[in-house]
Amino acid sequence: MKIFIDSNVFLFAYSSRNTNSSMVLANIDGDLLTPVVSYMVLDEVQARAKELYGKDLAGLIRLNVITLPNIEIVSKERIKALLSRYQSYVADRDDLPHICGYFAADCECFVTVNRRLTEMKIKELVCFKTPKEFVRDVLKLKPFDTSLGI
Image (cartoon, rainbow, N blue to C red; front, side):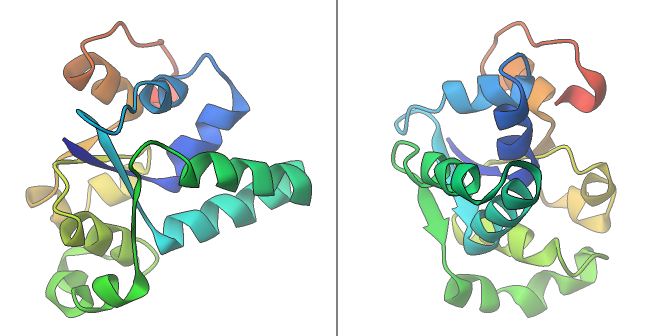
């Protein structure tokens, strides 16, 4: 199963081990669960981590992302090819590259805590799950009881 992982999942996982986000990442094996991110997710993770933790830790967090087993990083070119097809489904321009990355990589699930994104018209075409839902429904593990399912 290919899963698109949003930047917020990485940031919440780093902020605390006792989150569903950290459980998602800990169970990525690269075989049954293949992680997918876009180039933009990498940029967002590094920029936000730099604000929160400083330059050195931001680099380490980015390294942790790109070294996930069999990770697929969707390039700008692959995303650009799909922008016009999905722009009418996504109200926030910043979220559109993530959606295009999901489709470019032929993902089956999009793990995010971005509630606004999950309420846009694109929800008709994308299988969104919070980290809590993913842990419970896909991993079949007992999730942490956290706010917003983080």
